[in-house]
Figure 1 (cartoon, rainbow, N blue to C red):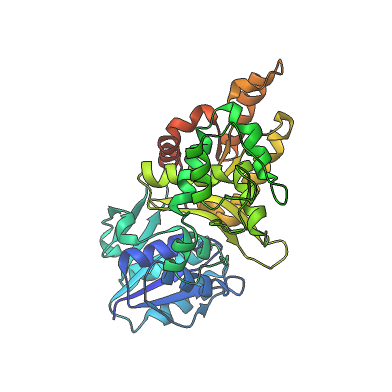
Figure 2 (cartoon, rainbow, N blue to C red):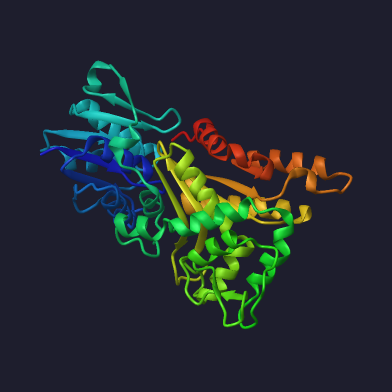
Length: 397
């Protein structure tokens, strides 16, 4: 039986990648008392990638005791013939012990080199010959749900990949409305904001052309009222309300800024070459302190990017926004998480004497945190820029 042994620690993606690349029938998880809960997260992530490998009951080692690690791993693998040892995870002592067992047995050994997107393979570690294979994202089957589950989170409407993709793909009508609002001239906005407040009191939008209103109506953002030429917010919604908002609250939010999330999703999905793009993702609904809301999430070649969109900001808030986005992404994606903060304003809109210097310094600060700060100036090249950020990211394990 084709078997893979892996070392579970705080970061599961090297284990997930190794298993998906090799596709064993049986997985032997080596854990510590602290990492034993990772087994259920590993299994959930594998199932989201379509992998049905059976997980054996975990085997516990003392993470900083070389003799115990060697003895325990050796005993667990003594009677297995078709064995691969993934020595990427665990403590350095666990990793060293696993690699030593692979050499003395001998057994096939692999190391997931995430920095260069390679799998380092020793078919017989006794020979010292190492070959590399590029990680093939199509073969691996990585997607947004895999990354989120591997980081130990639960996802609203994420019981299966099919359900997840259905729930986190915006309706085509919303995509059309989002594109139209992004392209709207400035003199449309006073009436758009009035429509965003039209809950009980109808609004007659005299400056918005019929085709514009029809697109909003088709997307169930607004609906005709009894008054001639007047509209109110629609009582239904094609969106996915956060915090149990009403349909009208969700439609109001869409006009005021939610359209940006949909537009960025559609740009990445339709103009980019990414493995997976998800919109409007809610993590850990219910548990205090763990819930998070992701505007857009992107996966490509084993990298995971969280994108937050903002309609308008005060430059004085920019530093805090960068820190918040960095902290959220580390919580959501661990070492494999990267982030982008998109602000739907042109850099030149800020007229403070030192605005240019503040923006430049905060863009550098975002990079120092491992993220990127983008503006309306960058929107035309958004998918290209995101792809470039993914390619330049280095996350060595």
